[in-house]
Image (cartoon, rainbow, N blue to C red; front, side, top):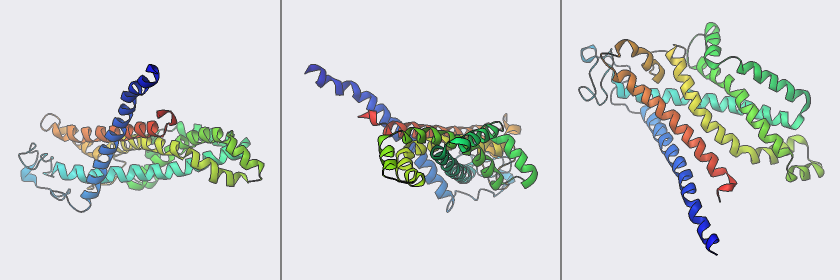
Length: 283
């Protein structure tokens, strides 16, 4: 009786720690989304407005977070950059996740040569990092939002394909799938009605984690000049522009760097929290 009454007490800190990760990640991501949406209708100053007379002003001397080398308000640029970074990352993950998940589920249903071919294609794509892919695309398409989204999405396809394939193969060995096959359901019907709903949790968790990687990749592409074209601000370009002024205005590098780190941390915590939340062993 003592063991039964003490067991829930031992599990409580573990359950609370899982909830804290989910709450912290949701709060950070929710804040970023709110700032991104707010930037579409309001920023303290127009992000592209130059006021050379107020250039390189420190935080609170002119504006809350100071100004850059052109006198642009740093807070307004961070807010506008939040929308650009999140929109590119989310779009790329949705496109890459949809294509990769569909390919993985199809490979699990058909097996054979399609599965082998998919894995070899994934190996080829993995051999080309998204930065290199963006440079190749930029040579043909030019830099811009489309190039960044395409490069990140192409890299996401094999990531989701491998995860979905592994999860779908496990689902195909379950009793409910065997029962569906026994009553004559087609592989397409089984994949859509039985396999996909039971692995959707894993896809969602993986998407949340990959969003952090996508934001980091988008910042790297913008740093190299392959992201959104100027004068639209992005966190990565703000870092690139700040290199010359590290000694005079270190906040120009610190602020976007902290913002990128906060975004990546938020999505990683959200992904870990969702994974623990969907884990049936949490009870």
